[in-house]
Length: 297
Image (spheres, rainbow, N blue to C red):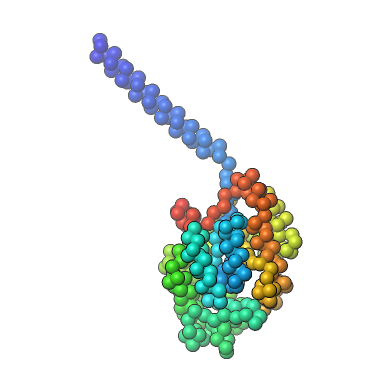
């Protein structure tokens, strides 16, 4: 009789443990089901290394603003300064802003490779072409494009940078399938995702051509109305300095007084009102290092 009672006791104890586990499991499932879908936002800055003021603006935006990731123009004049800042701030998520153009009047840069090795990528003076149209009109050879883009990635790695993604400067590498294929090939070879090709919605948060005085207002409106999903906001942080005031875009559709747009974007990234909405709406800021760590790219 005692043995039978002992068996009943053990059976009851096991049954209770099973029910507790089931209850916990159901509770967890219910808890997960009740969690609202997230608005996730990657804030990508382009053109790091372009100018001293740009590098300073990136450091401010990373440390005091909502910038989550930034792309370096490796052939540009202030790349070494940008690379040093990245090494000194290991938490920054950075990538290579693959470049075959130098669009500013009186402010040019050349390829990483000796220009005689990539002659179809440069003008008679050995500089990158200022516009996508001029680049394409020179009939650039795909093999030269690949060599130069690979050299840019290798230069960044040689400077000790921890790279998290690739993306492209202007539209030149987006206008022909063979150039797109080169970028995809390098992405796979180096194990680096292509920004904008990771499931992000990059149209909703486009504020590039929004007038400077309205950038913060428009960004606030977009943050307030964003539906759940993964978004990409592309910005170009800058400062109002003599250096940036001297920049004139050679593209026919280039923004006039570009320094006003870039400094306004920096102010929007630093805005307490922008930060407050992000906090109140529980918008999750992400970078490509985190996406890779989560196995989402």
